[in-house]
Amino acid sequence: MSKTKQAVRTRFAPSPTGFLHVGAARTALFAWLLARQQNGSFILRIEDTDKKRQIEGAEEHIIKTLRALGLDYDEGPDSDAEHGPYRQSERLDTYQQWAQTLVASGRAYADPYTSEEVADFREQAQAKRQPFLFRNHRPDSPPEWDGSMPLRFKSEPKSYEWHDEVMGDLSTGPEVIDDFVIMKSDGFPTYNFAHIIDDHEMSITHIIRGQEFIASVPNYLNLYEALDLPVPVMATMPPILGPDGKKKLSKRDGAKDLLEYLDDGYLPEALISFIATLGWNDGTTQEIFTTEELIKRFSLAGVGKGGATFDEARLRWVNGHFIRNLSVDEVYEKAKSYLPEEASSKDEQYNKSVIACLQERLKYLSEIPELSMFFYKDLPIDLSLINDHKKLKKYDAEQLISLLKVSRETICDVEVFTAGNITAALNQLLTDTEEKPVVLFSLIRIAITQAPASPALADTIAVLGKDTVSKRIDEQISALKS
Image (cartoon, rainbow, N blue to C red; front, side):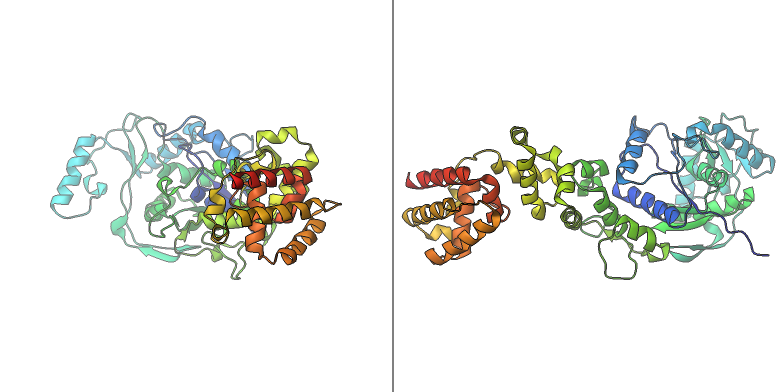
C-alpha cells in the first residue's frame, strides 16, 4: 500500500526588526515558488520574540512588501487558519508546554548562572585554548525551573549526517553540540527553540533559510530527537554578495528597502525575475523569467552553493526589459503618477504620447520627470551642450545657425505632422545639407530639448508639435548670435 504524499507547506518567518531586503525577499520568493508549484501552502509567520530589536510598523511593512511583490500567503497573522496564531508573541503558552515536556523528560534545566559567571567560564576556556561549551559547566543540582531563570536544553552530543537540498550531504562531530537556551527569563522562547515547535505545529514540510543558520543545524537535530519530532526538508540559501562579490550585501553597499525600489518605479514582475536569478537558474541561458515561468521551472536543485552578486545595473536592465514588453496603455497606467507637475496642464493623449516616446529608454519609472521635462516646459538654453559636443564644437556659430535655419524650414514644411513624415523630412535634410546624422540630428535635438539625451528625434518632434519646435530653434539661433 503506497504512502500518502504530504502536502507541501513552506513558510517565510521574518523578525519585525526592519525593512524587507533582497536576501530575505529571495528566501520568501523561493518558499512561495515551491508552494505554488506543488499546489501547497505558503505561510507567513512573524517571529517577534526579540522585543528589544523590534521596530514599530515593521510587521506591516513586511506584509505590504510581500503583497506589492505579488507573494500572497495562504496563512498568516491576519488570518484565522487552523495552525495559528502566526505571531510568536501570541504562542507563549505553547512554548511553555513544550518546555515543560523537556523538563519532565530530563532534557532541559534551569540555568542558575549570572552573566558574569558565564563570562568567567569563557575566559577559562580561552586560557586553556579550548572552545567554550556550556555543557561542561552544567550545574550538578539545578534549581526547579519557575520561569525566573533561563531554561537550557540538555544536549546529548553525537555525530550527525544530514542532507541539505542546496548544500548537499553534510556531517559534523559531537564537539559542536552544546546546551543552548530555549526559554529566556522574560518568558519568551529563543529562535532556536520556537521555530522548531512552530514548524512542527504548522506542519511545515520545507525550511528555506539563510546560511547563517547552518552551523546551528546539529543542535537543532539534537532537539528534534529529544522531542521525537520529524525533521522537515532543509534548504540553505547561499549569501547575496555586494557589488564587489567579496562580502555579504549590506546597506552600505546601497541595498535598499524593496518598497523603495517599487516606489522608484521598478515593476514587481521585474524584481521577482531579478531576485529569482540571484543564485538560481534552470540549466538554460535564459536570464529573464515571467512569474508563471518561474513557478513552472523552479527547483531547489537549481540553487547554487556559492554566493550571488547583487548587480543593480543588471536590475535596471531587467526592469527596462519588462517596461518595453508592456503596451503603451499599460506603461501609461503605471507611469502617469511619475509625470512632472506640469503634465497636469496637458490632456491625456499628449501625456500618453510622451510616455510612448520614452518607453524604449526607460529603466525605471522615477526617471520620467527628468527625462520628460522638456516636453512640458522650455528649458534654459545651455550652450555647453554644443560647446562640449565632440562634433558640434568644431563648427562656428554662423555654420550652426545656417544649419538650424534650414532645419526649421524643412520641419515646418511637413504638412501632416507624424513621426513617419518627419523622419522622411529629416532624411531629405541630410541629403540637402550633406551633413552626418551625428552633427545635424544632434544639433536639432539640443535646440528643441536642451537635454544631453532624448528619445528618437522624429518622435520627439512629433510630440512637441510644429509651433514649439519652431520657437525653440529660433531661441537657439538667438543664443548663438549673442
